[in-house]
Length: 339
Image (tube, rainbow, N blue to C red; front, side, top):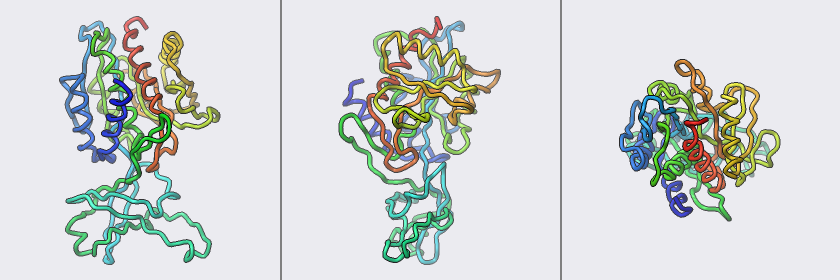
């Protein structure tokens, strides 16, 4: 997959909506993309699942996971004066809410703006609104709005989806559409060669709220090894951050398989694929935590893409990190029978 194809794929993934528990659109789109490599790809209980590679009983069974869902809001109220009250879906920082453009997904999609007072009228106070105080202005009167929008409908942040300078890319939902893109990039490496192991792909739902897609998906697939491909914090490489453009962050944590983490490092060094360490002192906060305790236990590791401005409408990654992550996954699949 060349750079142009990767950018096109990522742009498409990031413009399909799918908040936690309402991932049907992105699941259908991701399933269609996965079928190119896994003809048996299908949607099961909200998860996308597909398989390829060596199906013999003694083949190592590797599961590759990235989550489908994005953060967002859920409609909790339509006031008599036509404003929309909301609750959060996933972890949100309300400091950046004021004046954000959003899309409300009702009987049809409509645009809205999160209400805010101008600085001239707030007496110099910069208080962060509680989620119960947040109101969205759509311009519709209440009577008309209630014909379009219902309680429980979803709201997504509009943000931008576009290239920045160099190899940087911005979108509201790179967490974790960039993980999906890196897995598809890895599978694309095997267009002209056989994979020695059995590979199952899980594009899981509801990671941002309770991780139940990971729990149910891993139980169904029953792998020997699981790689959770997600994002982590980009920065200057200190205090647990990774440097954008310098490769996948390989996880080391008490909840992960140290042997698997070390194997990935060894493969990256042997093949000269850029990589970074991500050391965590407890749980990882990713689907890998659930994989580790699935059934009798699964050897699990995180492979993360450095991301700026997590859980905002302007998340930013370096496209090279998606490629490096995909290449590392592909090299592991080539060697996993002997690991």
